[in-house]
Length: 380
Image 1 (cartoon, rainbow, N blue to C red):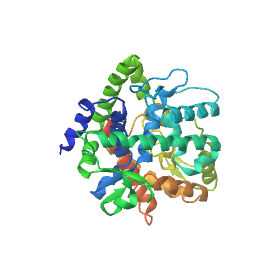
Image 2 (image 1 turned 90 degrees about the horizontal axis):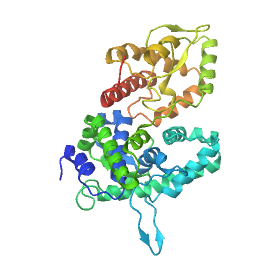
Image 3 (image 1 turned 180 degrees about the vertical axis):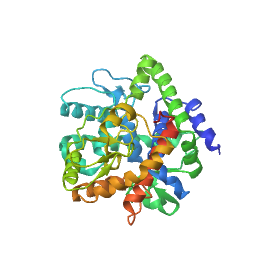
Image 4 (image 1 turned 180 degrees about the horizontal axis):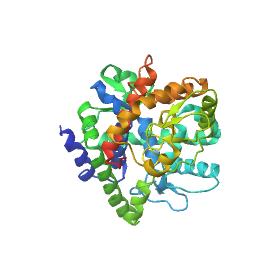
């Protein structure tokens, strides 16, 4: 059995690749580890639903299924007089992209896959979109999840040599901790504890190597410029969804006397004081509008100092009580607290119900620190 630190480089640099699937698999595992850092506290193997990995794949492969300029991601073969697709899920993902571009009026953005998976990760957000789009999304998730089993099987030498065969969560529940939101019948990939820890420690390197190898591979099979491919693989969404609902609910709280404090400047925010609804983790870094990531903040500091940077560990320590105060304030609004609890249940494994606001603030601070360290990001 290969040591955990050798597994990643061996798969990326030495495994035979006729598609980009193995690269996408490792990148998705790496992103899952970064997304759920508090799972490390359980010191256990982790069960990751294939549908979660499939969400990441939708975001990664989105730029390659532009109907006007498709980019090949593998070899095509002739079978019974028919030319096969380079990706088994290309038809379903292309249809999802077509449906999405109808929704947004034909505009194209290579990062729309990231935007879409974060919009549709929460069931409550489905109501904003047509059933046709939801059906196309679920069809694409199912097709991708089925395809993901292939690189899981063939990673490393032989079959099932690195990863065990995926099983439903109820079959592995006694020996794993699940990613938040996992259901008993979800088919899961089990990531061994030592491999999970290796991804945590080497996250920046894994991301860089995955993208480098993907650019080289795509350049070979598609004849596209590697710099162009790099731009597609690293594109991130802007914050195009207005936060009108969230801001209206917070405005009501402020009018009713709830006070907030900017976590970065400690400036009081109350009635008559302008504020921004700040993404603690900026969209460019971590594209999510989940409510735990949104807090009232000093607009001048937010626009001119924080921007797309993350707080230092020292500033984060000062901010944590103010984050707790913000989450406590949201608890005074029935609509906000319902949304907050739903978003938290899908994201964090260690938030205590009995000390919700306090443990959430600690978990969010931990996530920010983990992301900053893992990706070596600029800080303020």
